[in-house]
Structure formats: structure tokens, C-alpha cells
Image (cartoon, rainbow, N blue to C red; front, side, top):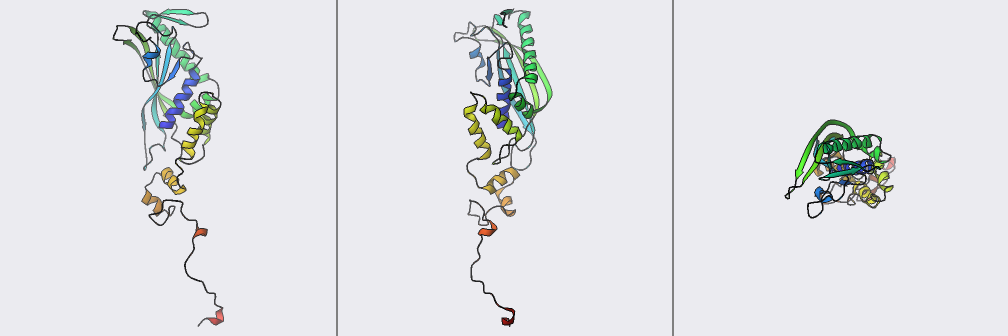
Length: 264
């Protein structure tokens, strides 16, 4: 579910940005989230606001044939909410929470509630993408985490995992269907995502300039001998280009028209 994961994370990050106390501090699958929480010396916070990191994990799906994405599957949509290690300052009125007591737990709970409402009521077109890519949430798991660095700095955090029934991967070499067209539209209207829109569209619609029979083989999830047996590939096993159309086939030798009376 590579493209499904990509599109779902992108949509979720766009829905959360500016709609929680983290404000724009929403990051898409960071390798080292703590670098956005603590300064290089691991002693002070980079920012007094929370940080939200979004990941996808544990993808699973049933399958048929040789394709590995043609059917709907499930994946875990994972949220990590991090707080600065001492004091949290949030909201337009600079409300303060003490991270080292019950204020930390309170702030984490309230930020997650903001995430929940942002996913439900965020603006189009990203909400449309989220709703098309995440058909149903079947399980919710949540747990508090206390992260301790080598220097003894403790960072309150919360992990929330949503198990999602997800959209199948797009057909290979076919025009974008309405689900993927929604992602394409949202990306082109987003200044940061727009440079990738043509790349993603080409990956789906024109994967390596393959001949049409190879694209059909991929979408039918069958082997090359099977697609040749169906008559959709060139008869000559050494040919890899487009199969000849019936009108293109010529037969050797001359045809002679004989009147009936001329027959023996």
C-alpha cells in the first residue's frame, strides 16, 4: 500500500496543520522526531508548543494473483503527540500547562481531541481525500509514553493507533479513478505538494512506457505465459512490444479469384 500510505499521511497532516495547539508543528513520518522537540544539547525545548508526528505502519491485505495491491487492505495510522519537557504554552491567550505534573496528561488528552475533530471537520479537499482513502476505522488504541533521553530529560508523549480499512492501490497504467483524482486535485491546490502531483500521476498512469498487454497483465495479476495464452500478447515469444492488431496481420502468398464456371 505504498501510494495509499503516502496519500493518507499527506491528507492527515494537512487536516491537522493549524487546527490543534501544535499549530503548524505537524510532521510527516520523521526519522528523528525528538530533534523537533529538543535542541541539540538535549536540555531545552525547541518550541513551547506540542508536536504531532504522523506515521503509517503494519499494512496487511488479502491478495489474489501476482499483484500486491489490487484489493483493499488494512493499515495502522499512527499519531505521536510530543510535549516540551517542562512548560507547554498553547492557544491565542498563551495558556500554560506544566508538563511534569497532571498538566502534561491533560494537554495530551486535549490535543488528541483536537486531532479527532480536525479529521472529522477539516476543510476540503483534504477531508475528501482522507474519507476516500480511509473507508472505516475498525480499532483504536492509545497509550501514554514517557520518553527519557540520555541526559535524563523526560518528554511526555501520547501514541494513538487507528486501524484503518484502506483504499486499494490504483490500477497500473489506467487514468486516475475518482479516488485518486481527489488526491491529484488536492495536491495541485497545495503549494508544497503541487511539485509532486505530476510525478504521482505519471507513476500511476504511465509506469515506464510499458506496452498495453503488459499493463493488462499487471492489472489482471497474472503471469506472462497466462497473458500470452489469453491472446493479448504477441504470438512470438521473443517480441516484447505491442501485439499486432488483426488489421495489421498479413498472410503470405497471392490470392486468386476463380469464377464458379472455372472450377473443376
